[in-house]
Image (tube, rainbow, N blue to C red; front, side, top):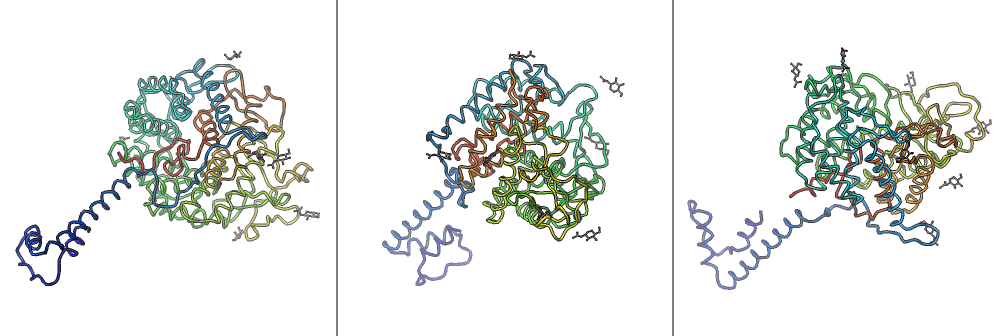
Length: 566
Ligand SMILES: *[C@@H]1O[C@H](CO)[C@@H](O)[C@H](O)[C@H]1NC(C)=O
Ligand SMILES: *[C@@H]1O[C@H](CO)[C@@H](O)[C@H](O)[C@H]1NC(C)=O
Ligand SMILES: *[C@@H]1O[C@H](CO)[C@@H](O)[C@H](O)[C@H]1NC(C)=O
Ligand SMILES: *[C@@H]1O[C@H](CO)[C@@H](O)[C@H](O)[C@H]1NC(C)=O
Ligand SMILES: *[C@@H]1O[C@H](CO)[C@@H](O)[C@H](O)[C@H]1NC(C)=O
Ligand SMILES: *[C@@H]1O[C@H](CO)[C@@H](O)[C@H](O)[C@H]1NC(C)=O
Ligand SMILES: *[C@@H]1O[C@H](CO)[C@@H](O)[C@H](O)[C@H]1NC(C)=O
C-alpha cells in the first residue's frame, strides 16, 4: 500500500498518460525525469518519511513488549515495609524460602520420583514415574532465580524416556499435558535449552494417539507402552478441552501445525454440540457422537479449565481468534444468568454454584477449584472490556478469601455449602430457578455468622486457585488488599502444613490438631502453582506480566504469540 500512495503523490496531472505496456519500473523512471527539481526533492522526502514510518512500525511490532491495545494490568512496583506490613521483597523471600524448603526435601528424598511424601520422607511414582514434581517445578525454580537447582533439574529431564513407563500403567492424558508438556514448554521458553524442547515434543508425540477417535475428541487415557489410547465411551470437557494451549504452543515452537490442528478439532466439535443453555456445557461428552450427554454443569472439577482456556486461547492468539472470544462470552453470560448465588446469612458472599445437566436445577455448593473464576473474569473483563465482570470477580474473590479466613486454621476446605433459604428454598439471585432440595439441619450459630457451612470433605490439599485469583486481581485492579489476603493465606500454609522436609496436605481445616491431620501428600501443583502465584503476587507486575504471558491451567507461563516472535 505505501508504494502505491507514493506513486500517486509524486505525479502531477499535467503529464501525459503512460503507455499501457510500459513496465511499472519504466513508468516511474519516465515520470521521475519529467518532474522538476523541487518536485523530486519533495518526492524523495516523502518516500524516505514513509519508509521510515513503515520500518519503525515493523520494528515496534517485533520488539515492543507491549501491545497497542490497552494493557490488562497496571504497572505496579514493590511496596516497602511501612511499619505494619512487611515489604514485598521480604514476602517474596519468605515464599522463596518455602520453595527452597520443599525442593530441598524433594531433592533429598524423592529426586526424580513423582512425589515426595512429606511426612514419612518416602516417595511415590503414582504419575507414571517420570518425576512429575520435578518437571512441574522447573519454571518455578527459574522464576525464583534458583538457577543451580534449575540446571540440575534440566540435566535430569534430558535423560528421561517418556516413551516407556511401568507395565500396566495408563497415563491420564489431560494431567500429563498440563503438568509435563506445559512445564517443559515454559521451561524451554525461559531457558531456550534445546533439550527441554526435545522432551516437550516427545511428551506431545507419545500422547497424540489419544486423539485417534472418530470425532477427534480424545480418550482420557493413553497406554504409552503400546502406543495406543485406552478406548472409552466418554470423557469430561475439562480433560478434552484443556490441552489446546499446550499443543498450540508446541506447534508454534516446532513449526508443525499438526498439533494445533488436531487439538482444535475438539473445540470445534464441542462448540457445535447442542447445549441445554447457551454457553453452558454438561461435563460428560460422548466420544463417538460428540454429544454432551450427562453430568452437571460446573465451573468446578471436570468443567473448570474448559472455560478458562476459552479466554486464555483468545489472549494467546493475540486477540485474533474470534471463535474463542464468542465462546467465552456465551459461557460467562450463561454463568451469570444461571449459576451465581448469594449467601442468605451473609449477603457479602457471592458464589458460583452448579447446575444439573438440563440447566434447570441449581445446587448451592462452591468448590475451591472454582476459585480460579475471579481471576479468569478479571482477565476477561480487561481484555474484552466487560466492566461488570470485574465487579463480580471482586465479590467472588472475597468469598474465596473468606473460605480461608473463616475456618479455625485459616485454610480453605475443598468446598463450602450454602443454604438456599430457611423456608422457601430461594436464594436472592436465583428466583427463576429450581433448587436441588436437600433436607438440612437447622443452621448452627457458626453457619449463621460464617454464611456457609462445611461439607464432609474438609481437606486442604495445598491447592492454588484462590492465590491465582489474588495475583491476577492485584495486577488488574492495583488494590493492595489482595496482597494482604495472600500473605495471610501463606502464613496459614506455613503454620499448619509445613513438615520437616516439605509441606503436606491437611485433612480437616476445622481441626487444630496440627501434625495429626497431615496426610503425607504433596501434589506437584504446590510447587508448580501455589508457591509460584504467591511469589508473583509479591513481585512487580511487569515480572511475568499478564500482558506478555498467559498461564496454562498448571501455572506454566507461555509467551503470548506476538511476544514470542524471534
Ligand atoms: C501499611 O500497609 C498495609 C498493607 O498495605 C496497610 O493496611 C496499612 O494501612 C499501611 N500502614 C501505613 C502506616 O501506611
Ligand atoms: C524427614 O526429613 C527431615 C529433614 O531431613 C527430618 O528432619 C525428619 O526427621 C524426617 N522424617 C522422618 C519421618 O524420617
Ligand atoms: C499387568 O496386567 C496383567 C493382566 O491384568 C497381569 O497379568 C500382569 O501381572 C500385570 N503386570 C504387572 C507388572 O503388574
Ligand atoms: C487408531 O485407531 C485405529 C482403529 O480405530 C487403529 O487401527 C490404529 O492403530 C490407531 N492408531 C494409533 C496411532 O493409535
Ligand atoms: C429465616 O427465618 C427467620 C425466622 O423466620 C427470618 O427472620 C429470616 O428473615 C429468614 N431468612 C433468612 C435469610 O434468614
Ligand atoms: C423447574 O423444573 C421443572 C420440572 O423439572 C421445569 O419444567 C422448569 O422449567 C424448571 N424451571 C426453571 C426455571 O428451570
Ligand atoms: C478475618 O477473620 C477475622 C476473624 O477471625 C476478622 O476479624 C477479620 O476481619 C477477617 N478479615 C477479613 C478481611 O474479613
